[in-house]
Length: 122
View (tube, rainbow, N blue to C red):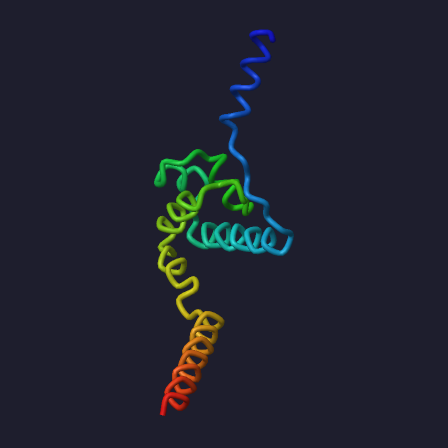
């Protein structure tokens, strides 16, 4: 094994693995990026200004505006904060309709089981 082989092996241990992003979810990120880009344009904010206010590079800001899935959520939050839109992110899953329905079904099932146990005991 050569020195170069050892370096390549060590480098592969430190490379980040990107989470798989399915096409439908990829489109959600692209839409988010477009919304961020439009919000910047409406305010007259350039990529340079956003980069300066967030401490991010212009490349990262551009990647956010393109909806890149490899950019950290924290970076998206930083840009949304500069735009005054970070509270929109806080509303994600706030009204979890599916979760509430599942919770109600479990509660009803548990109540049915308890009433079934109580009636057989009497």
